[in-house]
Image 1 (cartoon, rainbow, N blue to C red):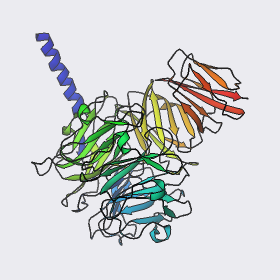
Image 2: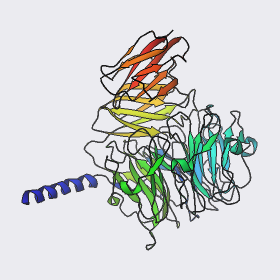
Image 3: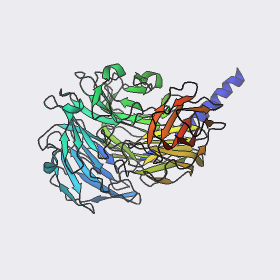
Image 4: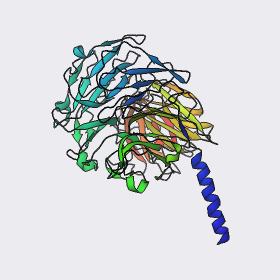
Length: 569
């Protein structure tokens, strides 16, 4: 008994040391952003996004009525306020999203408001903006919009926008980007519910990895169920809210997306009132299960913004939740949940000292490009924002950042899936433009990789179907990947003892492997995915549908993959 007690004490000491290593410090004042966003109803969003393409994550703050938007340029890790000549937008704003809607390489700005109307501001070069809303087909009337999320739902290389309107007067809207500087309201034709639903936010994501962007919408006040729209791949959606198990009628605020259990299917975190938040675990079959209680992330507090990120670079996605009250206290610290790597989390609020404001929007970025993610949080009651600098001292904190540029897909690479592998263990990220509670995260995707020094590979699956793979990637760098520059051009054999026959093939190709084959994908010579299946009949694949020519076949096990070139004749 004495030995057991000592062992327990030692274990707890090591646990406490490990947790104490994850530490954040509010450095808003010292870094030049001791500013407030005002006192707005249901708070504001924030963008932690590099708006001038110089490699440093900048800050964009929405504001209360009577105050103009505020922009802070990141200059080598400190912030300097900028004047972009947008003082005319001096009414209450909800979200500010940077988006290259015209694929010209610079970032345009979309601003939402419940009372003053939405604005699309075109960047004409050198951060000079003009209001083009009236000429684009986007509405100039008030829609009571809170959140805006951009995605390419019809895979035509141009980003479309979904507007979440928090009102019982106007339904949500889906506007298709026509590629010529104009937009069309396709809400009805696309199958979007035209019932006004007090919607706060929405996010595009791919729930079934079929290459088409689905859409999830959070609705408020228990009056309207949340909505899950499955993309049919033909410009229309089916409402699968009920069958997918995502149709909760709650005080839903945020829609936050991340693959917290690293199974290759993206999960959703939805904040709520004191009755508890929802962690919708993606089961991989177009259904979801609420894992909030079992994972320890229910957090029975009135919650708003949330964000998944790897705070300690240990390869696991952690979770931060902004909150305001638990019913008995005026304000309650936000919840910070460390991922244990077994689909459970530990609440560790000591990592954020003096986090005692009524908080709403939040976003992640990297202030000084040190590979440790930082966090910005907006607060109510004219309290200054929090700019939480990650000051953690960690033994194994290597990282990789991935910056994508689309060529065939949209320039911002929104809707791409990034997969990395380290010694057979995989992580996944999905690229968004407008996610969380009316906010926008850094456009550079971050992976914590622990003590790894070389990654097996980085794989990007673009909305175009093109797949780029970079093998043997060193850590602690920003990896720039341009669509089509690293396609399947050579054979790769990470899956040992696998082989294909016959080659050339007429109709049926056979796969031999000592490992269990879980998925097979076929690509053309451009790296575009043509076919994938997990339904393997004795490891035989019928390729009779292919035209004669050269192709690649990718054979995947649970931890490895191999790529072979073959001839169809």
